[in-house]
Each structure stands twice: as C-alpha cells, then as structure tokens.
Length: 106
Image 1: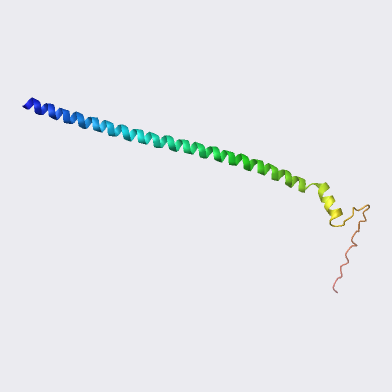
Image 2: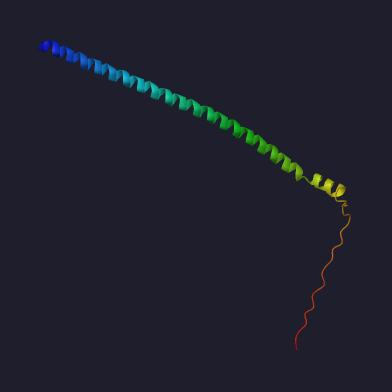
C-alpha cells in the first residue's frame, strides 16, 4: 500500500514536471517567434529608410545642380538683356568726389 502511494506520488510529480517542461517550451517558442518577427520587421523598416535616404540624396543633388544652373552668369546676363532690357556697359566713367569743404565757426 505504501509502495502504491509512493508510485502514485511519483507519477503525479512526473506528470507535473512534464507539464512544467511543456509549458516552458511553449513560452520559449512563443518568445522566440516574437523576437524573430520583431527583428524581421525592423530589417524591413531599415531597408525602407535606406531607400528614402538614397532618394533624398538624389533629390538634393538635383536641387544643387538646378541652383548652380540658376546662378550661372550666362543665365543672369540673358535675363538682364531679354526680360529687364538692360544693356552691357561699354566704357566706364569714374566720378571722383570733390574734397569736402568744412566751415569753421569764428
């Protein structure tokens, strides 16, 4: 009778231990899947951000090229001649200011 009780008690402990191991395994698998899913999601987001950075760098280069073209001297001369009706000066006359006269108070 005592032996049967010990056997039943050992079976109960064995069953409980098996259930604990099974539950721990399930929790570990679930945690692993969460980590892998999160890592993959972050990898995809990093790839998207790198693509956006590349696109913005190309746009920046295009804007720099456009700004350089708009600031070119030939373009400025063209606009001043055609749209503003300005003409290029041929010769220059420099005017020297006369020396200033200062009156003294007596």
